[in-house]
Image (cartoon, rainbow, N blue to C red):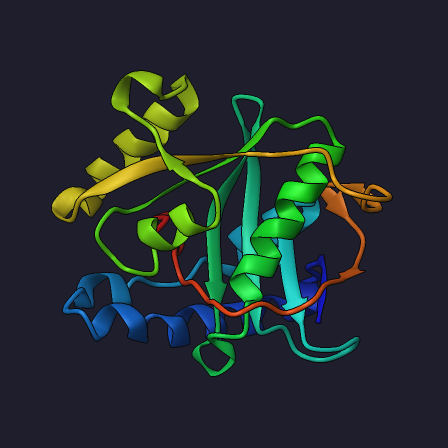
Length: 205
């Protein structure tokens, strides 16, 4: 498995991943979230140009099976979106992708990963908690996170309980990964045993 910077020619594949991954939400009655449109090609392209688009491929040259969108928010690396295709679920891809982002963030002196997610969806907040994220109280939110939550509420996402989470980064063991969290190069990782499916076009899940 490889984690590397996304490229323009892969953007339509990432939209396919997002649409397919929506089935998880339909299975628990959250049809509105399942039907949420994927990020536009323009939005994905913007993340790619800024170095905030990461993809996972089973082997060099193959189609992506997962992706993440990241951006700097108040000195941390914010996970705007992370999605794994259902056909590649339960292979540790989500865990590997988050671990890689944390390692690269640490190497770049970034203290933490942050995200917003649904509190009660099993593969959202409970999953992230198992991977080292902790829930943030309202008083602990930085200005950028407060704005993100306000935007989510305005979009109607607070119909279901949501929260912000933070995972401290740690100094990587062994050589630091090549590149920065914003302009990565490819790196090989080992598979784990879990999967995840949060965000969508501007509305993190």
